[in-house]
Length: 444
Image (cartoon, rainbow, N blue to C red):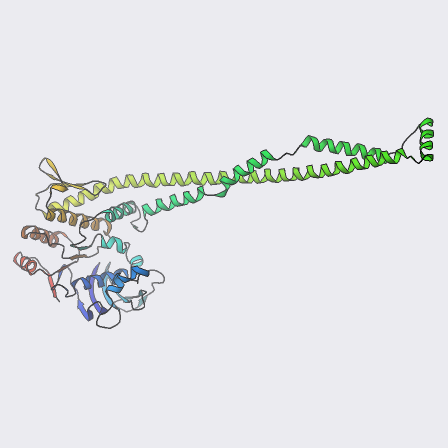
């Protein structure tokens, strides 16, 4: 990718600013506060967009910082070439929301962006990776946790799909969050409660059968005609004369007993129904619990598989990264150091002769040069297809003349990317002229 032209309607202190850009090394030279960083931020905003923050974050965000000082529409356009095709991107930040339009430069035919931004449609990486690789300033040249996460999140995808939008850490974190939520599934608590319900339900099947038999016996006794002997009929006749009907009393007692048995049977039926329902709920809960446990096992296996795969790829990628850092750093230092080795915590050691030198024994300039090599190496591996330009904003402040000369010579001979070098140092231009390093100058 190469940037060919920028036109700023209004962005920070710049208003109606237009310039064409060259390939190779382009030096944007100017005194402090002349607008060098503004141009760099405009280029990044054209590539990745810029939206207004919310709440307190909006007070110090780039949207607020680079609002037009001298009027004009907040935005502009940029022409860039990508895989041999020229495009024009127009952005308007005025409303606080990034409004982007993309065209083929040669025909001005508009390309629909739909819900996609340029960074998702034209190239793979995002603003975060951009800021920690190809875009560098003196203040943030030293990398830390952010670079480590970028490398870890990108390496597996570089080995497969070349799609760095897949975030390994986020994938694992999302799975762990899903696992936590699944463990909160109410079915686990419901199982215990239903088990206690089943144990505490006092349903007596034997008693229900006994009630049924006793009811049937009483109903049979009430329905069948009584057979009495002669003596029993005489006794019943005497009792009726005396106003005593023993048969009615006996039948009344039987009916009363039948009512009691019916009530008890109804209660037992209700208990049986409740028991059956509880058992059904318990079996359904067991089924759901088994499904939840299987899902938890699947999540655990997925987490383990991702972490194992990431570990294997990290080892391979780490070797490639060490090789690339060594190639670039040794090239920039004229072979003073033979090899660079970086561990998982981003600590680096330099091989010099038979020994490895720890970073804590290096000068600030050497450490910054080492981190510069790391960023270039990451750019080579992460942006291998898109070949993004390098944006170097006064990154050589601690370099002596010899180190600066070696670094610039390396960039001019070995780096096949467009390079934007933002500086206010006149001696840097003199050095490049002295050493015959080709560059194109833009003076602000």
